Length: 311
Image (cartoon, rainbow, N blue to C red):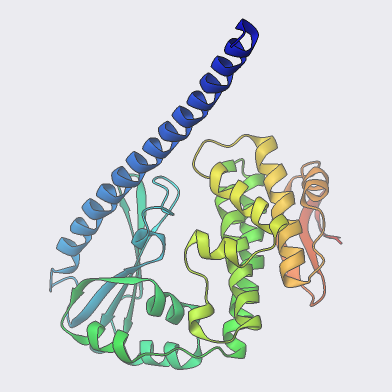
């Protein structure tokens, strides 16, 4: 073998070795992050179980479950994801919503009677699909175990209306958080808006509960290549600090993805943000008008409040 060929072979081997090493390190980092996140979630759930087991605070408790990304460490982002908990009681609870700060996360506890839960399942609220496909018991007197074996949520007009409304509401929240300079939160809302929209379209195309995409991987499978790339970008960004330009860019892209999924023409959010930032806006809303959505915001000019609409 000549010297040139030998050097070329060495370079190829070295390049391949480096590529394999980088892939191995990426896989190791991902595995370590997964294990650390899993341990973090387990500790938070232990704290919640201790709290929920206090019968003075939570009387007549039938079961408490966790649902959402806290069931899936791969999708959970410490510092960005909430821990969603549903508490079901025998009879009407004294309170219906409780929020608790736990280390780097917020635990959102929703309380309802077993009768209310049965109505939610019957009416086809998205929560029913989350319970059906993506829940884990924290405390159970046997009611949850029985329920999960027999429940079969139905896709109704209400299901689709809520998912569509949730997609636009999350995008609206992303716009609002950006204007408050909370750029990571804005990115997280963009991420959720695409998830809601993907679920809406998935159930329209295949109206049965198993078609409801739960995990990020399932959501990606329900998206086109362009939509998937935008969604993946939101997933990556929400795991770090986000700059103003990154926030504008991803909100604009998310708006485009939502337009495609919902078949609803949404104004370019980059252009809209540039317009709104020249004012001192009050309320900012994204209003659904069927085949399009418009951005409405109010500004105070002198002693008058003016409502401005961006199409």
